[in-house]
Structure formats: structure tokens, C-alpha cells
Length: 175
Image (cartoon, rainbow, N blue to C red; front, side, top):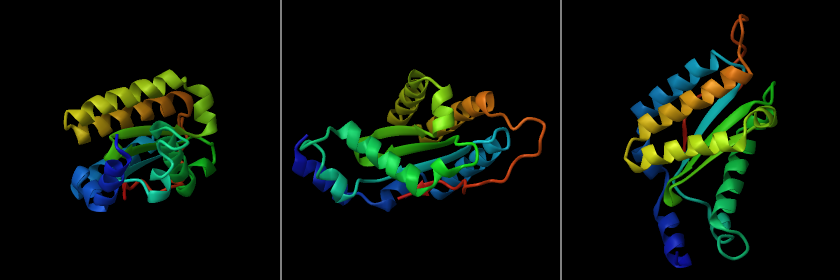
């Protein structure tokens, strides 16, 4: 894609586009699903819907890095900023959507990443992408959350103990 068109598209989009993609009522329902999910396992799940990349990331595309690497770096930056790496059991998961590029990234912390094959994550990303392209944002995100939750329950169940402290907010971050 022409670099200038990409730059314009990213500059044109903002948090209002994220709010249109995931309106307040949908964000609340997704947050409740995250809360319910986290009652069944010890993991932490965050969902970030970002409209566009900052200029510093855009300038890297096509010069020295391909788009997927830049999107992955941005997802890793959010993973760090939201402190998903700092959970008690090292089993946080970030679901990251970049609207301007129609890109999806999942980032799993080290304990969970050791347990789940990369192909499993890619299959979830592919199913989510299919749903999103069909206009099913809520259905796709709900299905992805359920699949991530199933992996966390399989590898890090809460057991019979009372649910642990919610270490991170469950709200959907729309930027």
C-alpha cells in the first residue's frame, strides 16, 4: 500500500472509530464476559481496540520492518503498558485489534505461552478475523474470549478455591 495513503488513514482514524466499532453497551457486555471468565481461572485477560498506530510506528512500516512485525510490537507495547506481564501466575492474555489495518494480535504471558501451541493462537485469530470481516464484532470477540478462557481453564483453573484477586481491570480499552 502506498505509504502516504496509510499515513493519512491512520491520521484520519481516532478513538471515536474504536467507540463505533465497540460501542459502550458492547464494551460493558464484553467486560462482564471477561469478569465471568476470570472467575474460572487464575489468568487475566485484556482487550484493546486501537483505531490507528502512532506516527512513530507508522514510519517503521516498509522501511525496515514489515507491517505484521510493527503491529506485533505495538501489541507487545500495550501488553507491557497494561502490566499483563506482571500477574501473579504469569498467565495474562492481550487481545489486540488494530482497526486501521484490520489486524489482530494475541499476546500471552510466558507461563501460558509455554502451554499453548502457536497454531492454537493463530486458529483463534483466524476465526475472530472471519467474524470481524462479516461485521460480527460482538460475536467474534465473545467467541475469542470464550476460547481464551477455555485455554486458561485448561491450564490454570481456579480450582475449588475462591476466585483470586482481580489483578487488572476487565474493561475494554478503546483508543
